[in-house]
Every structure is written in C-alpha cells, then in structure tokens.
Length: 397
Image 1 (tube, rainbow, N blue to C red):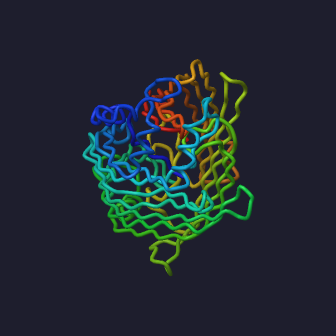
Image 2 (image 1 turned 180 degrees about the horizontal axis):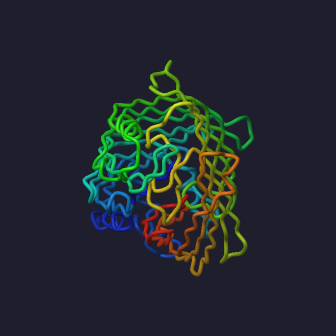
Image 3 (image 1 turned 135 degrees about the horizontal axis):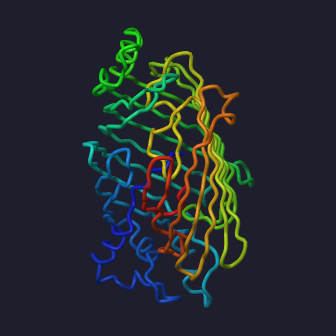
C-alpha cells in the first residue's frame, strides 16, 4: 500500500502538445475544457511519455521519465461510448482501466531506479492484480536502527532488486476482495561515514554490530494475503465511499528469506461528500513487524505522511491519522487543506503514549480526466523539520 508519486502535470501537458493532430481527444465535449479522458481511452495501447519530477527531500529531488499504457477492453469501450452519447453530463465513472507503466529516475544524491508494473482489472473488476519489479541504487539517511536512536543520521546505500505481486478475487457480490500477496527484495547494504556519527563513549561492540548489520547482502522473501473492502466511487480521486485494506506477510527461510519475521499493515480510507462544493476525507493507517532478529532498515515500518521525508521516522510499530477538506469551487478546479499526526514506537503498548509528529498543508487539483474521475495538482506540506511540495495524480493516499 505504499504510494510512489512519480507522475507530473507538465508531463501530461507534454503528451497533449506532442499530439496536435488528435487535439479533439483532449477536449471534453460537455464543457469544452482540457480533458485527458478521450486520449487515455481511445489510445489505450499508445505510449504516453510522462516526465517525472521527484520532490522527495530524502533523495535530494530528482528527474526521470515514465511511459504509461491504459488498456481498455471491449466492455469498457462500450460503456465509454454510451456515456459520451448521453445528452447530459454523466455523473458516474468509466470502469477502472488496466494500467501498465515503465519508469526510470535519477536524483540529486546519486540515487537511481528503473522498473515497471501493472495494475489490472478483469471480469468487470471482480479480479484485481497489482504487481511490479525494479532495480535501484538508493541513498537514504537513517536516524535509527532497530532500538538504537542515532546521534546523527547514517547515510546508507542500498542496491536492491524488488518484486511484488498481489492477486485478489471478489467474494460473491460483497465489496470484499481476498487473495495472495508476495514480496521479494534482494539487497546489498553499505553504510557511509559510520564511524563519524558515534561519540567516544559508545561501546565498540555496538559499533561493530551495526557495521555488520549495515554492510551485508540481505534477502527478504514473504508471502501472505490481502483483504480489501472497497466502496469508493472511483479508484483515482474518490469523492465518496470507503476502502479498508489489511495485509499480512510472513517472511521465512523456507521461501528464501534470510530473516524470519511477520509484517501487518492496515489502511482505512474514508471519503465524504457533504455538498456539491464541499467534501472531506480521513485516512487511518498502521504498520507493525514482529521479529526476534534485527531487521535491515529497508524492512522497518516508516511514517508515511506528506511533509515527512521517507525513512525519517522508523520503529517496529507505526500509526497515522490524516484529515483533508476539499472545496470544489468550479466543476474542474478545487482547493484543499489537510493535517495529520503520526506515532512511532518499538513497544506496541506505548505507541499512542508517545509524542505525535504533526504535519499540515494545502493544495489544489484540476479534474484532468472526468470520465475516470482523475484529478491532478500540487500539495505543499509542512512537517516537523521542513516544508515539502508534491505533485499528485489522483488521491494523495
């Protein structure tokens, strides 16, 4: 359920400028405004280049390129043509399209990645698949290792191969989906400047233990299940409905993992439409790991909130709550404000007794694909240490 914001509004506009002969596909016949619905559906197997602007401060900004492919089946095409033939502006959205993507990116701290993935809907959405694979060389600063809070952050280089797959099936006519999930990471870790961060009174065995832990080849391999309850009105930018997801992964030596541990992850997304102009949303989230052995930093839960750099706050247990209010001041344009609080703690009994970490911010959205319910825009968030901006395609969650 991790979210990686790699799309950009400039890239979508570039796609428009690159296809002047098909400019009518970028105009909504109902209001005459710029809209990507026609292009994404009528060129379902075409290549759409999307420049990537990475605004994550943990990797010192970055740029890249993504190629996106929207796959429309015969049923979705028939539904789209029916909607376009209606005399009034439709109030419902097209069936979710399957989307494939390939991407590569490079950042200011010499991190890089390349990979691809697929998000598929089959049999009228009764079967859902989400999977991907990639390879990267990522440099991140870590402020804690397991139970040890560091006096200064460690710069850790992680060269890793990542593979993930989830396949879910709808349970009867209920809005419930259940299926297997799998994750595999093969990583080579190497710290930078480790000796410089410790004061003289730190025991040598602690330094040696951390050095051994951080300078290693580590493989984690887990299998489990994902249970999802989904009543959102669309998957891109929901305006009402609910989506609750529970993931469990067991990492075991018998399936290729160097470390045995269990991981639970929960997310609850709630969307409320108060009126034609106002709506709200609430996100609840939590992650927990249970292991008798020290875990590598990339396997530890981290606080995931706008305004907080990746991997800045980590612990065995993490919880978050965020709220968002949106003002839809025109049919196309909206403004929003949001705030959230997060907690991290190695002892689960003390999680909500610890001090909270707060972020807040504001942003705007433009409805760029009305038939799919897709909005794009920019958020600016202030966290405990810094102010960060994000390009958003779809919901921030």
